[in-house]
Image (cartoon, rainbow, N blue to C red; front, top):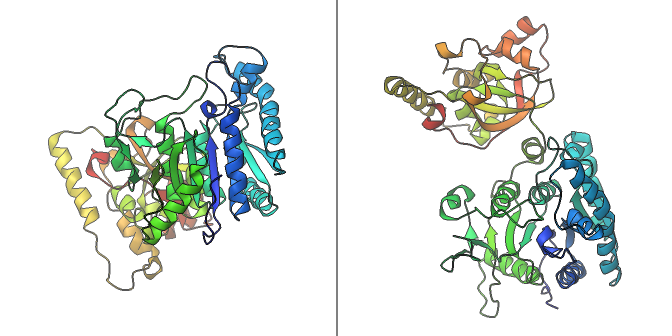
Length: 458
């Protein structure tokens, strides 16, 4: 067994295993050699002071074996029934394996609905913290028995990424049937090359093939792993794709990556095959991460180019004034998550030029050189930036989903009708129009994920 060297600081590590790494794709027999290797690796990490969470797929695959079925059913209720059959047997399998080395485990079943409420989210995070402090290995899976499409994470890659953000993990390992991210599918293309380090996921998408859809039992593929890496790295979690056939490499990879970060070069330390996605140097705060990735938005708030420009800056504080709003899409209540969107219109050449000028005008907005924090500017100064892009096409403030493109998310301080009533107004007008004003901001905890660019608006 590979030992993590002394001197490696304690890390919080999430290891995610897909269905194809847990059960055989055709026989549905548990892959005991892989599972035993994972158990040994997890226990080894624990012995060296690390905290470990295991995200395990496989409930439906185990259910198929129990019922002697060859393939999973097409209908939702059939899949949920198999998940109910298989989940108990899956956790029993893990418990049996970990019991051989006297390692206690705990089962944690989640849906997106379970953590869409902020209080329940914090309770889940506190439960993870307590389990880890007790020396227990939480084994996480989506609660497929009750999940429906509206509250599903979609796949366990996403679930593992959200969990890593929730517990402020240091590493997320996505164990799969290939040992990293390749320019093409290495199982089909002999010329495929592995990409060792990814600093920008948006840039790397044009260099790799993500057309693989995963196994017949799983729901993911390489694309879901890129999505997961986007979520986790934004939260400051170093994310790794490597092979489930060599789980002991997790120890080597952590040691190698920590030395890489420290700028240490050791001829005795060989780089195990893997792809590392570099964590953001400015991690998203917990509240913004929760808003962005765990809530299902109930509607959309349409903002202008000036507001988008301001909110894209970190010093803006992620709060939207009514002056930057040009409309809403859908109906939502105060306190619900909303999409932050910009208008997308098909226009002719002359109108495109006018839009481009407006865009450039937004970018040319200047501020005093000092001080540089958001608190140095009054609400109305920010409103001047957020409200300078109105047009005749925005009078009614009501557009459809096809007319807008999402650039971020936030939490609404007012309902959709109230925001529509005060769109484009200065903050001091809110009490007069609404009869009250709990906040001068119509949306808070805004996270902008897409930068301002002319094509978004034309």
